[in-house]
Structures are given as C-alpha cells and as structure tokens.
Image 1 (cartoon, rainbow, N blue to C red):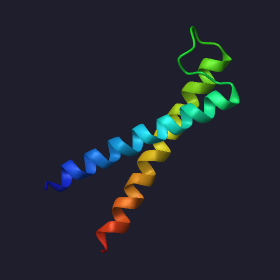
Image 2 (spheres, rainbow, N blue to C red):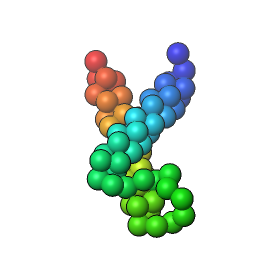
Image 3 (cartoon, helix red, strand yellow):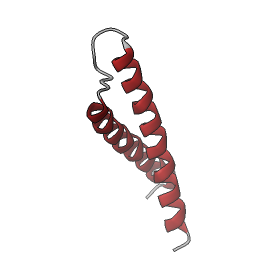
Image 4 (cartoon, rainbow, N blue to C red):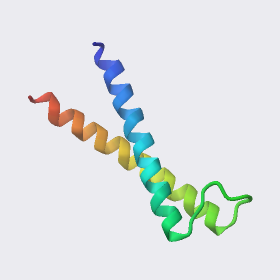
Length: 70
C-alpha cells in the first residue's frame, strides 16, 4: 500500500478521533462548539476541538513512528 496514503489516513483518523474526544470533554465541561453565535461556550468548544484534533494527529504520528521500527 502507498505509504503516503497510509500517512494521510492515519492522520485523518487521529484528527477525527481527537476532535470527538475533545467534543465530549467540552460538553461535559459546559462548552459547545456548535452553539449559536460566538459566545463563551462556543469559543471554548472551538478551541477544545482544535486542541483535540491536533493532539489526535500527533498521537497518530507517534503510533505510526513506533510501528515503523517493527
């Protein structure tokens, strides 16, 4: 399989998983990135979703790097 395709798919999966985890955590903390307008709840949710997506991509890349040595 093409290594660039694998890289893209794992990055995308990590991003989506990270955003979903951040969305759930944000909802538990009272933030909602899908709230109407740009209130504090929406901005906090958007920031958490961005951080979660970035963390998910980084975890996917670390996982991929750890499997490369095997």
